[in-house]
Length: 127
Image (cartoon, rainbow, N blue to C red; front, side, top):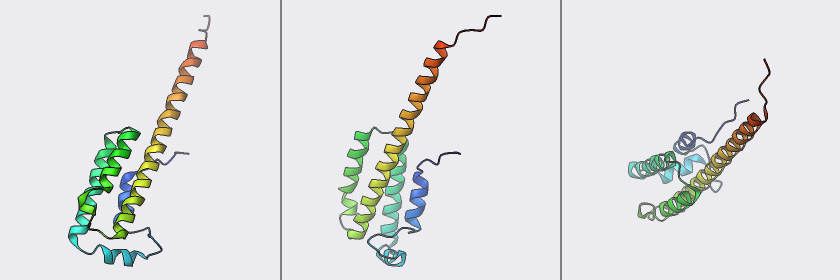
């Protein structure tokens, strides 16, 4: 069975289609908060920025620093608490995806090391 890895584009898709709710609000309520093109464009640009940042394969420390700077970004200070909630929610999903990716890389590294260690113990067949 093929394992499904975290994919930021799916996460972005969910945000733009408002498939999740925050604080028990319906998607319609959330749409009311983001009716202006400017708000949606800012969020879209930020998500694209996050996507390109994650493609640089940052370390966990870089990831934390970058996300905290995003939270303090002036562009978001004028948004209401629902928008801040979105960012918090997004941050936790990104960190979780980052940790899962790190765990997958470590697991592959261990399997590779084990494989090569076993190769050293294999004696060539006598012809």
